[in-house]
Image (cartoon, rainbow, N blue to C red; front, side, top):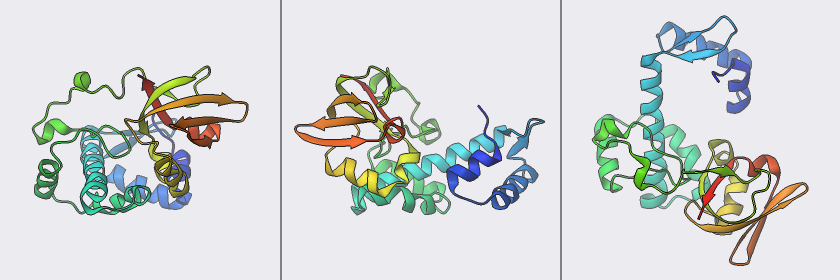
Length: 206
C-alpha cells in the first residue's frame, strides 16, 4: 500500500512540516506523485532512484560490518550517511570486494543487482522462502532466522541483544510463543522479545 506523509514522519522520526517539504521537492523533481487520497506513489524515475539508494545502503552496511569491523548495531545508521555519497564506480568496486553479495548483514535482499551485472534470482537462496515473522500465531519449534526489518535496525539495544545471543540471519533457533512476547533460544542462550519487535524479525523453516 502506498504510504501517507504521516506514516513516513512516524517511521523516520521527522516532523510533519519536514516531511511535507521533502515530498514537495520530490514531486517537483518528478520522483513521486501525490494521489487524491493523499497517498504517495513513486514515479518510474523515483523507483529507480530508490532502488539505487537502497542498494548502496545495504552494500555500505556489509562493508562497514564485514571489512571495517563496525559493530552490527551501529552499521545501519552509518550506512544512512554513506548511501547518498557513494558514487556508482565505488559501489561496483565495493560489490566486487564483498564477493557479489545478495543480502545485507541483517538478511535483507539487496535490490537492483542486475544493474551491477547480476540477475536477481532467489532460487539458490534458501532465506526468504516461506517466511513468517516471529509473532506469527502458532509459530513454534526450530526455524532459521532470515532477516531483520529496518524498523528494528534503528533500535541499537535490540540489535545488540540479538547479536550477543548469536541470533543473526542464517542461524537456527527455537521459538516459543508466550502470552505477551516470544522467546528465542539458541543453544541455551535465550532472549525474550515483545510481540511488536518479534513481528519485525522474519524466519523460515529449516
